[in-house]
Length: 154
Image (cartoon, rainbow, N blue to C red; front, side, top):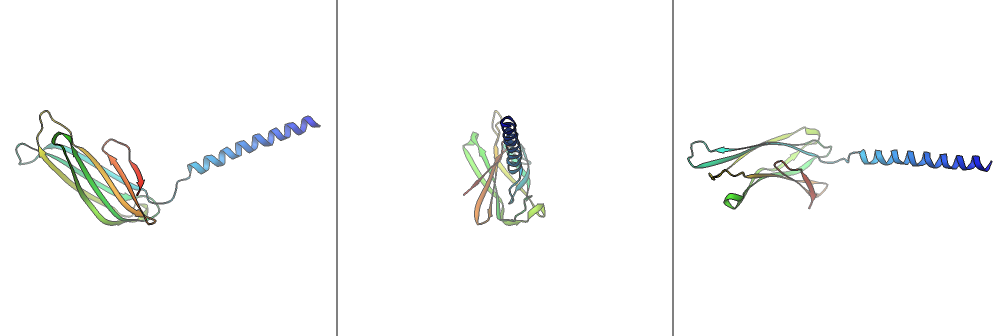
């Protein structure tokens, strides 16, 4: 009898651990509700049209909100980092728009940075920074070209 009770207790403990593990897994997999900024950006760099000795860096992009809350007072800034000329240029391309949830609204933008040609050719790094208000807090999403995006609260 004592042996059967031990087996029953061990079986209940194993079942509890397995069920608890599934519950924990489901909690981790659930996505938080809120704003989810989505963007698509194309960057090109080459000789400037009709300007001898100049180079053009162009950025064309789109930003929207695929989350389930509205992103208020959205600002998008493109930051050009030109290490060859020791310059950082910030251009605000979207300012003060509200992005509705579930991708209902998207905003497109274009901007250009002109610089003198470099020999040998050097690359200008572009960073996209998106700021918005969510639940009374300023949130920021920053992404460098070919780098992972990071979000932070301010």
